Amino acid sequence: MSSDNYWLVRRIPATNRFVPLMGFASDDALPRLEDRRDRQDYATAQEALAAVLDDYAEYGHDIHPECHLSAEDFHILVVARTRVQQALEEALTEIDVVRSRAAAAEWAERILEQERSFV
Image (cartoon, rainbow, N blue to C red; front, top):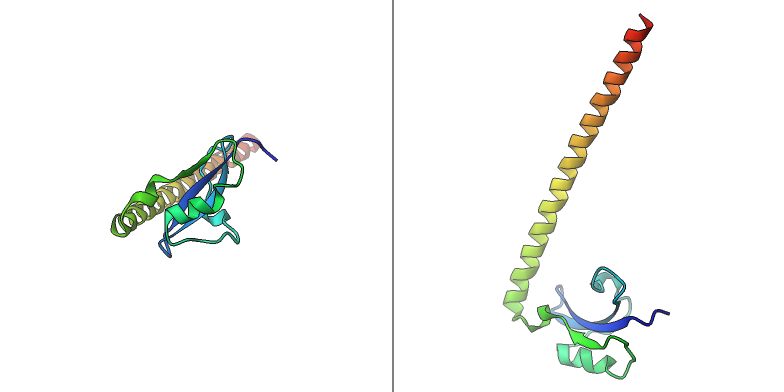
């Protein structure tokens, strides 16, 4: 078990409730809500934090800033994140299509060169 662990309380968008998640300082990303498994959720961030305060964490316990937003502001944040994520996914898909077309054109050009060399 890694000793660079910490507890972070995150907000669940679908329910507007809070859940403590264990993260690791050596990871590049924050603990994901998708990884919460069977963790209990709580009505307030303070309740979620209190639930894990006695659990050892080398890097401590904290509440994510998103937990301090009002429900309305948090909803706006989630909508904005979703739109940005969708736009990025569309852009990456478009890049993949362009790369695929370029690769296909390059492949076709090689075949034509090979055919010319046989003539």
